[in-house]
Image (cartoon, rainbow over all chains, first blue to last red; front, side, top):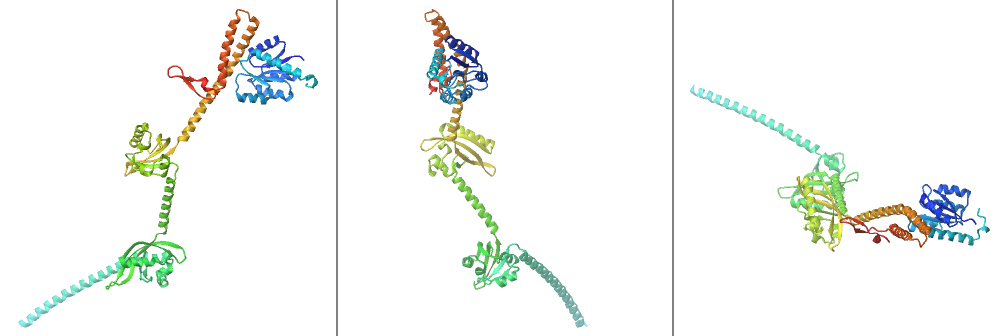
Length: 132
Length: 383
């Protein structure tokens, strides 16, 4: 399985940094600066691991996750947030996020999350399902 | 001749005397005619007054028969004319009094004292409607002191009585309202001595009426407010301000402090201010609620500001943190410059620690900063 990751963040410097870092670690990274762009990409391509910033211009990261979850029950979706509290966590879980990270988050931790996600997907034998 | 002459003189004198007598008689007749005329006029005047008077004028026997009544009395009882009334009534108490025993009381007073003033009786009119009349009368005795009849006047006071009852009822309601008001209602004289207070004053202050009456209003006010209040109400008198409002703390008998909002009006007598009337409401709970609301508003503003600071700081912090981490990886652990990266990472972690605390603010606690300035005590403000 190709290890593709979709990163959605409105800050270019962060997008590029994550792309550089994750690429170096063997992942194929696609970038989107907004939820709208992300949805466009997802219409043509399937991703099973995603990192979404919650604070996005236009459609929020929370809403984007809900929309993705309509068609994708299995994919592993992580949230990045600059500010959260207890209700933020509950909201994230309800929106369909698997986990969330409060910025600034160590790249090491992001890498760990990506690795865990793909390990999990492999263990689930996704080839047995029709996920297209 | 002389005798004849004397007789003529006499005759002349007699004639003169007779003429004078005739003149006197004529004068007398004229005077009498004039007096009779005056008497007639006077009688007509009195009759006019009697017949047209708006008050009822009557003469009645002790047995309750009317000897004379004017049209006003007849109308009062519902008869068409005085004659009809006099012919039909043989015992007024039995025929018209709502409570016939009232007649005994009426007679006893008149027989004993010779007169009666404003004796009020409810009577039934011929149409069975009830009216209240007021009678003032005197007793007319014969030479042997036997009662001949009573005479006097009576007026229909039904409306007056209704009005009076209405006023009394209104007064009763106002009194009830004031006495049972949850607010303290009181008056003081010009010196500030209590002259009246309702039951709420006792209930709220814990002092009994006997302990408050005649006391200065200072006795329930927190001491540090005495001077301020004195100045405030002196100003109200000087400027003749109709109504003022002021908030101040009182101390109850148990030593509990309560805040009151008080409206005060000046009491005037013949143009001079003679005292104050006040309505005071316990606003302790309201003030506490306002304080709480204010506290929440401050906290809300702090939390919102903290959220903004976290978001705005964490974004660039993420970029710095990530690049420092990549730099460290690129340099390798043994590289001499890596220690600088470690310092950068430590400082980034320090800032990240602050933003994480900001996210957890649930209280508004401050600490002194420089001089009078205070800043939020982050450690005490987080849950």
